[in-house]
Image 1 (spheres, chains in turn orange, blue):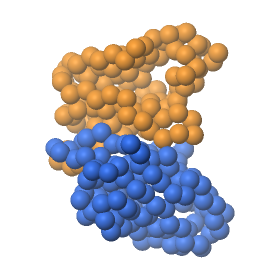
Image 2 (cartoon, chains in turn brown, green):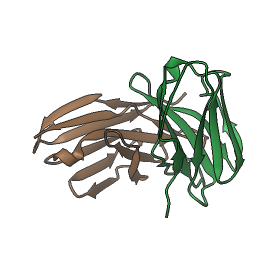
Image 3 (spheres, helix red, strand yellow):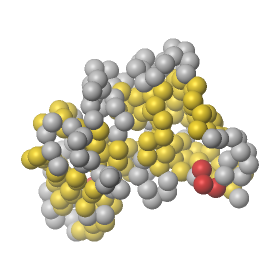
Image 4 (cartoon, chains in turn orange, brown):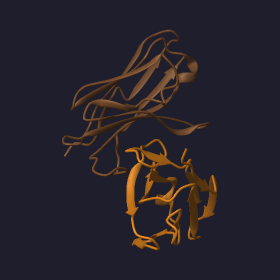
Length: 111
Length: 115
C-alpha cells in the first residue's frame, strides 16, 4: 500500500533558526497537504499543493511540491516559539477517499 | 460555524468496561473519519464513512471496536470490552469529498485512559 514518510522525526532548534521537514511518498500524489498539531491539540490544515513544482508561502512558512509529485517540504524561516508542534504531511491514497498521513516531525523551539 | 464536535473530551475507565465516543461532523460534510493517535504508532485511520456508509474499516484493530453512523450528523465509536492498550487520543474528522483526498477537519479529540 501507499506509504508516506517524513524526516526528521524530531527537530530541536534555537529560536530564530530555520527548520525544514521533508515528506516522501511511495506513489505519485494528486495533491499533498500539510497539517500542524500543537501540543495537546488536534491536527489543523495548513495548505494543499496540487501542481508539480508548486511553491506556496504563508508568512515564514514555505511549502514545496516536487516535480515528480512524490515529495514535498516545509521550511520555516526564523522559527518562533509559536511554531512548536508536530507537522504532518498527507496525501490521498490511490483510488481512495482517505488521506495517508506521515508520522510527523515534532518541532521544539528553544527560546 | 461550529467545527467537528467530539464528546467526551476525556474518558477514564477500567479495563473491561464499554466506552462510547461520539462525533458530530461539520454540517454539509459527507465523509467522516475516525483516527487513533499514540506516541508509538502515530495517527492511524480506523474507519471512514461516505454518506453514512462505512467504506473501509480495515484499520479497526479487532472485533472489540465498532463504529456506526446512523445519520449525517452523528457517529459513534465503541470499544467493548476496553483494554489498557486502547489508551490513546481518538480523533474524528470530516470532509467534503469530491474526487478523493480532500482536506480533513479534525475535532478536538477524546483522550481515553483505560486502567
